[in-house]
Structure formats: structure tokens, C-alpha cells
Length: 346
Image: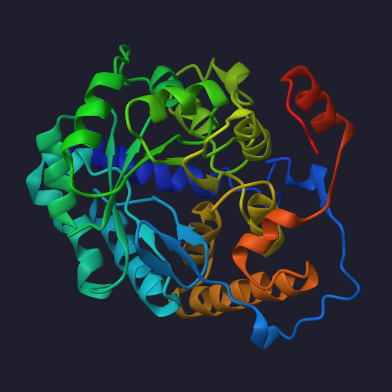
């Protein structure tokens, strides 16, 4: 028998594809990186690797949390795991909360280790869960790290969502007691510098800003409402670019994943130039798997990663850290945002 939670997983995948947009509204188009006519590099000189919590990554690209918790989404998790293994990218599974309530659904998540036995796999659970729950989801997928998603806006719009959000104490307990890296992740609404300061104050060293512009859980959850009356929140939150600018207000920063509207290699390059340590992509991967097939998707992703490396060359960046040295031009809208938020664009 399909539970409400399991059915919701299928709904989320279906609606994510329904609302998929070829061009993201993540405001990356409001940032220009200046072309380097004399890069003085060969493609073979470019090193796309980076280090996250002692793990060497071939690229600073994460296949983000998407799915699991139903028969259909379990099959998608298997395909995503194959993609991650083939391209040597880290991957996160979708929220495993459903499998804590229904242990028979655990294989829809643990299947990732069948197809990706040696890769970096990130477990996923919602804020508010106990240390025991966090340990259980990590064990479920033999994870190397844990994402904890904070999703107050999604829950408020979700017809059956939570209505109380007292999360900091539980987050602090998990960070203190879990012997693995913890990443606190938004779900498409972005983060302010104040939010990240609070997280750092309880010991969080890694955040996933997940700004507006990619998969919109505001639109997805509103569509699931009988009256669909909360469309006024479609544009709630900060874009990924605005969230990255917010991080400039911090004197010390955690490791930053930037997700939300990352569609092209250029989006990822811009995210790293703006200060991200890695970029995360979910909706575009899911779209290709749903509309084509596994082989076509793997071919697309390999070309995508090659494009990322080529853009590093065009910016004169031999290493990922060199991307931070880019000269950029911002749109009047982003200039206004930065000015009102007292953020330097220098």
C-alpha cells in the first residue's frame, strides 16, 4: 500500500518536471565574467579537482538531493548513483525521513551503494530530527556526509506540512555528536548572512545556500493545495546569486555549496567566481533522466563537465581557487541589492 509520504515523493518528481524551465531565474544572467584573451594555459593544464572535508572531488560539482522513497524514485536513485559513479561526482539522496517511518522503503535509498559503492554519498534528513535519526539515515546509505535540509517556507505552503520550527538545538546536537561532515541545506529559498552566522554559531562548517531559481518548492507545494491560493509566494526568498553576495558580509565563512538554478557550466563557473566552493545541480539532471534515458543523460553530463573545464581555461583559471580572482560586472538590479544590503562588490 502506498503511503501519503511515498505518494508525495512521486508527486514532487512529477511536478518538478512540470515546472522545469529551460532558463533559470537564478540571476546568474545578471553577472558577467570578463573574457581573458590571453589565458596562457592549455586545457591539459587545468585542474578541476577540489577537496571537501578530506575527500578529493574530480570537479567542484555535486549531484544534489532529489529523490527516493517510492518504487519510481528508487529507480531514479539507482540511475543517479550510476551517473555519479561514472563521472566521479559526489551525490546526495533525497530526504530519507519517509524511510524512518516506513523501513520497507529504505532500499529505495540504499540502492545507491549498489551502483556507486566507492563514491562520495551524502545522506539527507529534515531539520528537527534526532541524533538517532541522523545516524540511521547515514547508516542506511553508508554515507560519507549528511545533509540536513531546512525548509520552513516549503512546509508552510505544503498542505500537510509542519507549522512549528524550533531547529537550532537539534541541529547543534547532531553536529556535535555525528562523526561525519554535516551540511545544512536550504531547499530553494536561499540564505542570508544572518542565517549562516547562526549556523556557524552552533558549529556548522558546511552550508548549501540553495537559492531561488531552480526547482521551486513554493510552486510545487502550492499546486498540491486544493485552492492553489499561495502563488504570491512563488518568488519568495533570495536567488542563488543574491545568497552568494550575502556571504561577502561574513568575516569567516563555511564551505559553501551553491545550488538553485545551476543549469549550464557557465552558471557553475559564475557561482564559484562569486565565492562558492562547489556548485550543486538537481533539476537539470532529473529533467534529462525523465525526458531521455540513462545513456543520453550520461553523455550530456560528460559534455557538461568538459564545458566547465573549458570555461576555466577561458577565465585563465588553472585551479578551482583561481576562479575567485575573476573580474565581474553586475546588473543594476544586483548592484541595488548589494547597496541596500551594505555588500561590497569590489
